[in-house]
Image (cartoon, rainbow, N blue to C red; front, top):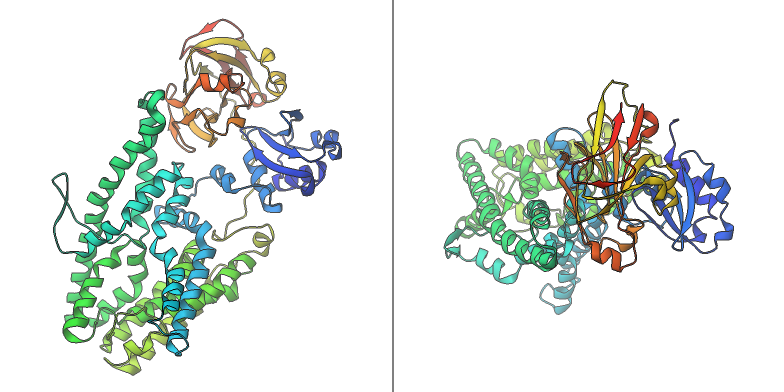
Length: 632
C-alpha cells in the first residue's frame, strides 16, 4: 500500500463533497469520517471513493460516511486545519509526545495551557494597562472602577486551577466537571482562609499542611492525572446500576482530601526548604543566592514553590523595610519577557507572533509572565532556557549590589521604583539590562524560527517547532513464521462478518474478522499489545500486538451516535494491555433500547499485510476462546 498524504486527502475529500459550505457538521468514529451535508447531490461520490486512502463511501443515518480506516483521526485533524468544522477532540488521537522526561513534561504543560493562552494574554495585557493607568494617575486605585477592572483582569489568574481542570480533563480523559469540582474545592474561600491562618488544620484526625492553591498549576494537574486512574478503577468495579453517580461521588471524596494532605505538605516543605537555604546564602554568597533566585524563580512559580518565599519576603519588608530575596526577581521576570519579545521578531509562525507581542508587553510592564511562558517560551523550550540564563547572570549582579525591594510589587518596569531605594542602583540597572540583553540575544540568534507553513496550516499556539505532523506510513509487518490467536473479547454468539448489518464491515474492506452478539457488557482485550486508538465515546479500540497484528474492537453498529452514553472506557491510548484486560463496560440494554445493534466486531485491520487470517464464522464463543487465527 502506497503512502498517503493525509493533508491532501482531507482537501480532496472537502472538494469532493462540495466544499466547506456544503457541510453542516463533521465528526469521526474509529474508521469513518462522518459528514452531514446540506445537499448530497453536490457530492461526487465516485470521485471521493477513488481517492488514495479512501476505502469506500456509504450513506446512512443522514450522514455521508467516508470510510478511511485506522488513520481517520489523522484525516479529521487535517480537515480541522483547513476548515472550521472540527472541534479540539481530534487532539485526543494525536501521538503522545516523545523525548526525555523533561521534554514530555514541558509538552504536557504546553498542551494543557493551549486553549487558555489567548485569554491569559488578554488578561495580562489588561493588568499591564491598569498598572500603567494607576502609575500615571489616570485611575484611582481605591475607586470602584478599579475594583471592577482589577477583578476582570485578575480572575483568570486567581482561578487558574479551574480553567486548567477543564483542559487537563480532556488531556487525561477524565470527567471534566468532576475535575472542575476538585479545582473549585482547592480555591474555595474557606480553604484559602485556612491557608492564611497559622492555626493547625486536620482532616479526620490527619494533619493537613495548608497552602494557597489560587493561581497554582501543578497541584490541579497532579489531581486530574490521579483522578483518571481512580475513575477508570471505579468504572471497572462498580455495578452499572449505581456507577453514574457513585463514580464522581467517590472521586470527589477521595481526591480533594488526598491533594490537600499530600500535595500541600510536599510543596510547602520543599518551598520552605528552598527559601531557608537561599535566604542563608545571602549572608555568605549574595551573588550565588541572586543567581539561584534570578534563574529559577519562574521554575519555582511553575511548581507552586514560590509560595514558600512569600512569607519570608513579607517578613523582611515588615522588619527591615526591604527584602533581599525580592531583589533578583526583577531581572528574572524581565529576562523571560525579553525572550518572548525575541520570539516575536524571530518566529515565522504568525499565530505565535500574535501571542508573543502582547505577552511580552504584559511581562515588561506588569510582570505578568504566564502568557509568555506558557504560550511562547515553554513550548519552544529554548527561549525558556535562555530566559533562565539571563536571570542567573542578572540576578547574581543585582544581588551582589545588595538590591532589595521596599514593597511587595510585581517585578516589572512599572514596579521599578520599589527596587531603587536599597543597594547599588548602578548594579541594579546593569544586572537587569544584562538579563534582558542576554535572554533577547540568545533567543533571537539561536531560538527556533518555526516554519511559515505551520502557521498557514492553522497551527494554534502553543506547540513545538516540530508541529508539522508527518503523514502516517502504513505499518509493514515482518514476515516472521508463527501463529497469533485473537481471542473472543466477550462471551456470545459468533456471526460471520458477511452477515453483519453494516455493509462496510461486512464487505471485508476493513479487514477480516467476525461479529459477536455479546452476552454481557464487559468487553475485554482480545490480544496483548498497545492501545493505538481509544475513541472518547468508549465504543471502539484499536490494539497493535508486538507481532504487528492490528485488531479493531468495535462495540455495536453505528453506536458512535450515542456519543458515549452507556459506554465507560477502562483504557486510554498508549496503554499496554494483556489479552483479557478490560477495555470497556457497556450498558447493552441502553444500546438496544436506543435502537442500535449490539453486535461487537473484532477485525484484523491489516489483513492484507499478513499471510492468512482465519476467523470463526458461527457457534458459541466463551470469553477468551480463539476467535481468529492469524498466520504472520
